Image (tube, rainbow, N blue to C red; front, side, top):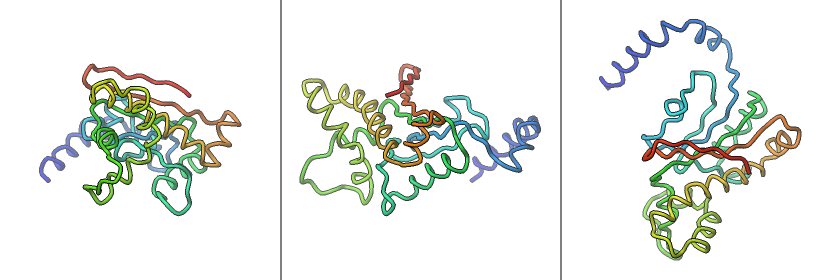
Length: 198
């Protein structure tokens, strides 16, 4: 806990107290431009890697930066974040960011049909990207496992982008050109960040 306390003290002194023009308006409301989906991996904090200031991005982090298909009875935490960001906050861009050496992607690629799950939640969650895994296995089966993982990191992002389009308010925003969907990949091994649109 001491690490967290000293971290906050440093933030308060060096950032919060030094930027009243940034923090004063945030006391009343937020108007983020982005909804970011990023992995919960401790190595890939999007605010740090993308240099985002408080108030710029409404952020959802989970295993593998996965976005499930629209369903009112399942994964409602993700669905409510998307709905609030799009309908209430009026974000302009939704970005799904995968990353290098992702444990969630490795778990997805390692899943074997008929095997019992090792975790209570992880395997079921990463199965959201099953169609991406199938594509990689079908098209890249001759490649080493690590190379397949690297390809799957981006293909899983594409599946999440497709899944976003199953949310009626996202589909409407894209159709009206008030909302853009963007894929991203952060390679922390080589220090690269790529973006694309489907």
